[in-house]
Length: 231
Image 1 (cartoon, rainbow, N blue to C red):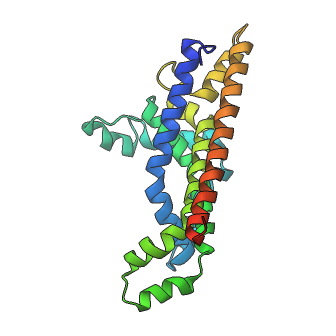
Image 2 (cartoon, rainbow, N blue to C red; image 1 turned 60 degrees about the vertical axis):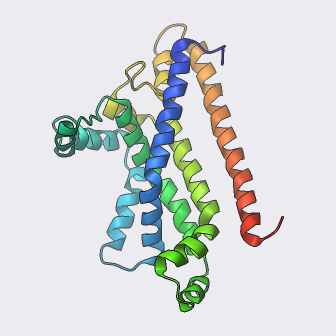
Image 3 (cartoon, rainbow, N blue to C red; image 1 turned 180 degrees about the vertical axis):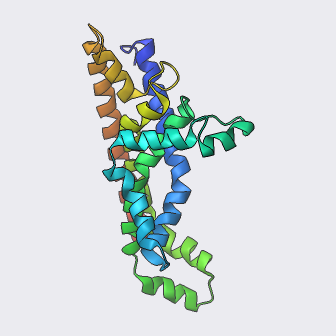
């Protein structure tokens, strides 16, 4: 990475940090939402499904503006968080929130498809042996859907790494604070002579994305073999 300048490396490090936390914090809620949409029957299920996938069809700038209105210093949620010292607008934490919101639908969709692929008879068989619902999920369902969970995490991470519109609207493009990889590429393209730095960051983005996909595929195959009991 020595061929990257300090500002470029800063953008790479911040993007990795934002993407990591966006994926990690989305995981519990994403798994719960996927199970709810795949297995549960409740009033408002269609509405929940629509809300989950809404960021996919809304312009990212609109999503960023909604976050700014809701989580900004004068927003209803932002005002509640301020007394606890939690500030999201124009901070890297806000970039993580924006990335999580944009990557959440992809995570949920991958996990939901994986849950729906599990034969309910396997879960019912475990339940007839006296296992609780939690134990059935932990010992039967969870091992079977691990490849889907991993795929969802990779999709969320990749989306977070490439998120631009919602992030720049919610947290702006502050060097060292909120300037992620896409924001840095955009900034370098706006100044004369910045094309070389932008190209270097594009190469880094491609390498990180490909590495994540290759790692995901390898881990998915290992997990699938373990679930099937093959060496």
